[in-house]
Image: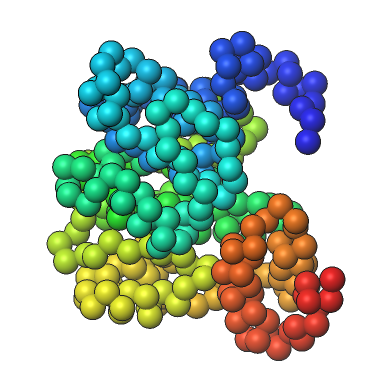
Length: 311
Ligand SMILES: C[S@@+](CC[C@H](N)C(=O)[O-])C[C@H]1O[C@@H](n2cnc3c(N)ncnc32)[C@H](O)[C@@H]1O
């Protein structure tokens, strides 16, 4: 989609063009660093939901490009993950994958190594799911993406590590704060000056990562997974208590894609059709979301004929 004249008037849009950033979002990460010094002491970083790559460019310019020697360069590891491919960036290894999949966490760990002194020191996530057009559904899907990003961070971060992620709807953040504080000692919500005032977007900035005693890191996707079942698979009682809380904000677990919201049957059908009919939405993600939708259709006795199987 072309940029509107409003975009072109925007100071950060123009500055991004001048300085060679792929998106104006670069300034959001730079402003977060100005406020919280997130890059200090960091050599290993992961950029989740990275395409088209302006945050990875920031990581490259801050961590990789200042290196003087080959040894210094070798010590810097930056991994960018997205469903979409993106053009190469110096010092950045790309993984085309889904952050809600276990295999993505495994690929990141394989690159870093699994020892505590080899793991990532910083995980950033600017993820945004494809929009369905229904505000509550979009916000819900965004929240689920944050849960997946957080759970991936628990798999790849070293003790003391930092986590930055985009959030929406910043007025109700008490639950989010307690969920994040399960894993991080310090928690802030920050809206950088480069984030449009009209947008509900803000960023959580967490530091001093530590795993609760007895917790086994695992990938959590509340949309796809039966939360109680996946927590049980670890054999950890701590996971069985904490995972439903991290995933859904309650201790009952969540089985349905929409169980926190009161959607009408028609809204659910339309949201489902919109997602499945979108040619840009990757098949693997469609497949994992479809499981949750079908469960909801069954629960509500919605005939399944309204779906993409007709297209
Ligand atoms: C707002 S863009 C990120 C912009 C990027 N930070 C930059 O500065 O260029 C959001 C990205 O999230 C990605 N995304 C959404 N869901 C994802 C998932 N489950 N796994 C990986 N990437 C995902 C989309 O493909 C999209 O490229």
